Length: 201
Image (tube, one colour):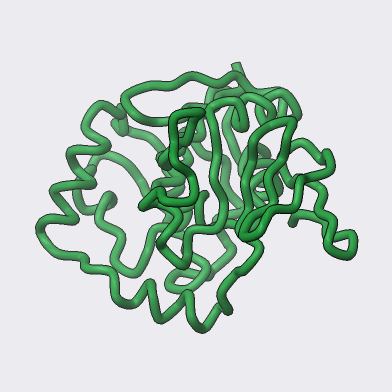
């Protein structure tokens, strides 16, 4: 996780000293931003229970992932939520589901994966680099980590951005943030169909 030095913070992405602002720690080197106030696990859990897993959600997930080749892949759906649906959509793949609250079995660490999906999850993590580092070690030689999250840039009105208003969203990234993480992880990064795609080849 990000290292707290009193009220000073070291960035979890690039390990440089972050700037302290009213509601956020922001790294001047890689632009990683972390909320200073992080809700309790109990509060987060209650918020996640309120998520709707209806036909609209299934349609959204199917549309979001329609360009991904799942055929005959071993896939880790990391942070899959209360009702994972991708394994029911893509029947020609084998899915392993993991979620801190709903599918907490850590046997997922015993496999090597063709694809690791982190869909609308990384913004909930206080320690994103540490998680990416762990997951990188679970990739097959030609495997990919596919991340879907909202990125911000210089045009974003950060403090009024709707994405920051979700109480469970605590980590925020620019494209450059992931580029810095990839450099440390020795990964290649591409932006493909709305996904940040990390690969080890």
